[in-house]
Length: 361
Image 1: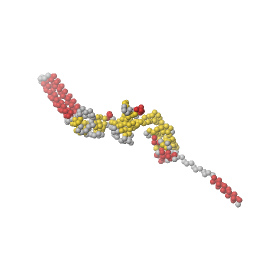
Image 2: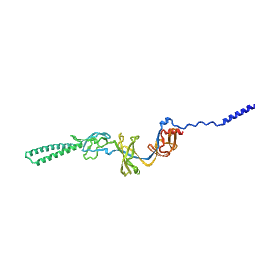
Image 3: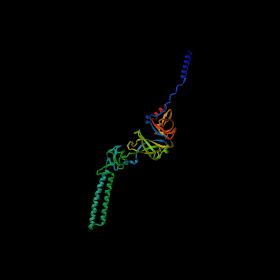
Image 4: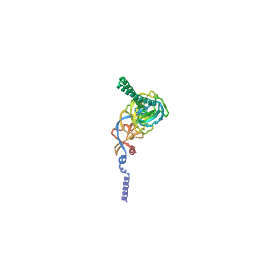
């Protein structure tokens, strides 16, 4: 009986001792690793040292290239019988813009007929003088005088022909106003039945080519020192807010506007789709170097969380780091980093927020 009792106590003590011992620790969790799917979704970019750039925003307007604009003036006075085009129409060189019935043209036609008649008479007189000279009935001075009259009549005929060619006149009393170049009608100052004086100083039409245009923008006096010819310019308009048109500063005017104290700069832009029209309002963005260099990364790769900026540094699919960075500033698609990154390091620039959440949750 005593033996059984002692054995029971020993069994109870052993059970109690085993129960008090700590359980064996579980195996450590595996390290974070990007899956094949996530690895195929992300994009990587390298940290590069780049010049720090700033931008200047200006307000301006689109204008036609003055070298491709021609004003059309009336060469004669008269009554406007017809106007063939409207503002904004595209015209071809030589196309009729307006028809003017003119007394001046009728007078030129009369002068042309008179000059041709005088030439025929002078040529007949010369033949007569030459026949008389051969018959010894006239002297050489008479033939010389007759030749001078022929030359004078020919000169008058040629002069009137040149006038007809310049004016584009036919055999009627109407004068056709024609387009001197291919382009758009960007100004129209004439209507049907308008009376035109021969000394009218105003142009009837302005024809312009807008495959290339200018943007004239105003620069504040405090920003003049930052402007240089050749600077790249991005232009946006109210009509096409999602489109960016790129050009260059090709002229800086030397005179400030006395009222606004602003300097005008000219930006030349290609306009192949003809979206930019003269007189459109334009917002111009100019970028220039600050004279510093810093590490730069795509602006979209920066994560803002808990009032701090982070990037995901990638060394391998199992070696990722969430690193805090000090962003100096962002400009366009670039972010300049003051501290936190070294040149050559690789960062995740696409879907980095998914990796950030998976690694830090």
